[in-house]
Image (cartoon, rainbow, N blue to C red; front, side, top):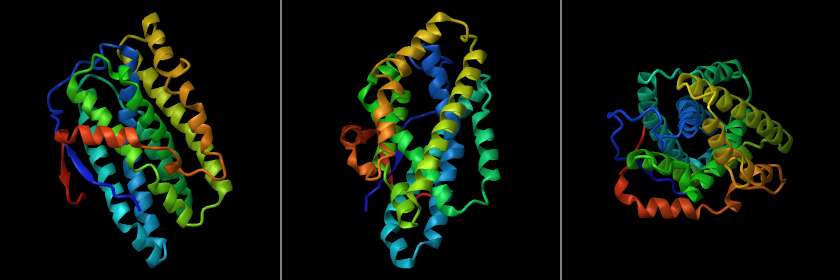
Amino acid sequence: MTNLPVRKLLIDLSTPFDVRWNGNDAFRSAFFNALSMSFPVGEQYFMDSVRSAMKVLAPEVSAQFAQEVQGFIGQEATHRRIHSLFNSQLEKQGFKNTVGPRALLRMQANAHREIHIHVGATAATEHLTAIFADWILTHGEAFEGTEPRLQTLWMWHASEESEHRSTAFDIYRALGGSEKARLRTFHIISFLFLLDITRQTLRNLWTDKAFWKWSTWRSCWNLLLRRDGMFRGNFAAWKAYEASDFHPRHSSNHLARHWLSDNIHQFSPITSEA
């Protein structure tokens, strides 16, 4: 099992930040804002799915995962809390969060589905966030010109996503979820994730009055679509999930470990998390 420490990030998000906080770049700010807007609802869903799975696993299996799941839930709870604070600043700036409520309605509509489907959806999303996290940790230019506290927020989140990348996947396997359902869920989640983030990013750009600017779409290409961009450069990593022998631990998370080790002064340990 994986040891997952729960950390309290020592940054202040009560102080406002610029509308184009990410290096004065409209697209980068709008895109990462869209991700942040999706996080609180998504992370609550991940926690609820894993908690529900623990209740139906055989006691001896549940006991094997107990410590790791406690850490997973603790980390996701801290992510939910700090991105809620970040999103509060966005709301004050006039940005409307539509991705969170839309995702919540979708979750409520699918609440009746079997628990392995929910854990499979969690595992699929965790794969997407893990590969994006690894990309962020190797592409510091994505936050070039950003004030240190916000750089720290995103690098910390990316590191912990990489750190707990295998928890939901292992629980899905422990539940006996099929390969067919795993892959079908992965493709659905990939489509919805990209659709939701695209819609929210476009809305954010419209609010920022940056939608029709050439510089906006040049930045979009550089961030997402160039040869080693976040989307285009991660296609092989996305595709890897389809392999029958795939496991998240096949990919190293040494970048996350190094960042957390080098920035230990940026957070304090939490012994338990509600």
